Image (cartoon, rainbow, N blue to C red; front, top):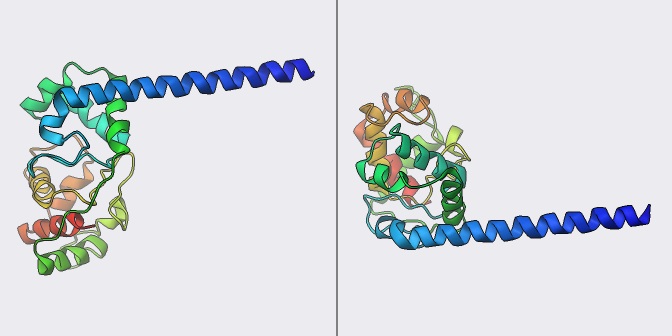
Length: 201
């Protein structure tokens, strides 16, 4: 009985060691990919080199992997990202997600405090007069999102605003269809305000 237990324990430790080595290899591969191409737009730490590119630091790994897959299949439109993702395999997409998820995502300094105050209200309460629901009901009170919904906290305001407009114009169709119904009720001011607010969280 003891010998059987010892064999089981040894097998378990071996499995953990192999799994850990595999994870390290995946992250090493991801780092190589990042330093080979991703860093040009998104930065080596996911901090982004420009406000037109999203910050990936702290973003959920599964969400990143899904977006890469959508770019590869054409479900989400972007010529640049279609070319970048075309060479990636599913395990590499997830590895890239894990790589960026483990990076620190600092908040972006708020540029317009009054606009952010309007955004704070919309984000947490919504607008009962127009039917806009509270963003926090899906993305969480701190804007941290979930595996299937993006982290918004610390994202560039201009990038968030652009994405809201793309949802509104039906130019972005790869994600939650609920977003189309939500942004359809949002005014340009509300989009800009919410984007300004979440950037500073």
